[in-house]
Length: 494
Image 1: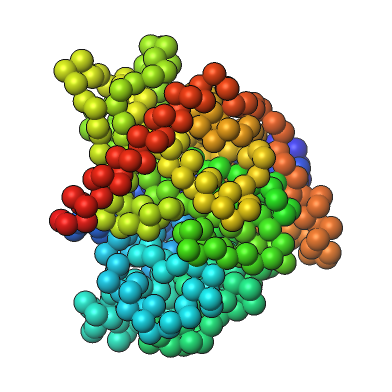
Image 2: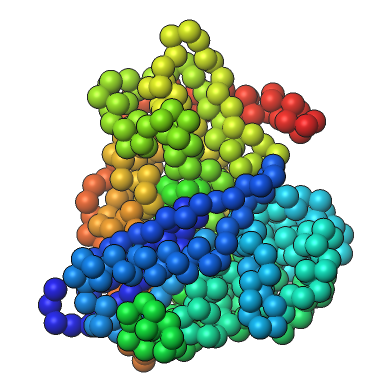
């Protein structure tokens, strides 16, 4: 590597933590990752131990150092991460219980309770109350774990817990805070009425900073543990906003599709533009004076990971066999609702389902059905954005699943828009966090720095929609939607 400053970007994902080192041009010079498990002790529950995130951070940085990456040249650090998780700390900053994650569906009852307590919640937040968000999780804890709830002194989001371990500060950014349902996104500030409805005050909340603002230096103990200098750490971003910064999706009308553990379609805007009745999320961007709309399917690449686990294969092996087979049509349909669903159903009880199995169905059929099912879930989200007047004519595509040309093409054919896969697209949120770190280290005119530093990375491939596939996929999408409507009464009754 040339002798110049480097920027460390960390992405705290659901299944793994990714760390990248980028140079001043934004190019990735080194990367590493360390995995951890999701605990599902009861139906609808999804939890992780925050200490596992910190240990994964240690392991990922140790990998970088072992591979020759010069961590002593890191000039600033940024962290992006999974949104909505509830990390509960006592008055000594000790973790009180496992973090309740974004794909946890236990708090549906509390969503109704919160909307009764704050009848204008949708106007205040611009969003529908859903179990994945943070606020109903706190009502669940108050109802089911009252002794523990009484000891809560701080509520942090997952990436903000890592920032706290790095700096000793309690901070967050507007993109992540908007997903709590305690923020007024238009004002980019906490809403005291929403906090009070959950028995909280601003004293329980981290301080708010734009994503590229420095919150403090790496404290000496963390620096020694991780092998880092005591350099500035910025507030960071929720993973989707971080991925957008990494992909250069920072100006109004630009959009991206994230094919990660969850599936997201994200469109940047210059104002808060809510449409809660269509389950479109309206959040802040992590950069000043910017917002975004977003649709979410809770299980995307996670569905392929699940199929690989139950068939005893690796995800890449399943896709390789599908590619080698040449098969592009199947009679099997798959509903990808392994953790319930958000857009467009807001249905935490939705379940995954294979339909159309026959004696000659094989794993290749199942793989293709899973890839199609995820693409159809994206189509539902894209339709919701079209109703909001926000669907772009082309999208960047990021996330681990975006590595597959076949899956990229299937999504492009289903949505009918080109998908652009750019350099480092598989580690987009980590690259975005590194870009935020560079913006914070630069200081000065933020808008000028954004124009210079947040460009779209070099294009590697474009998946153009194949018109010859339109009729087949449209018919399949119609059956997919009818299958959900027909089976919903069955799982709703459980």
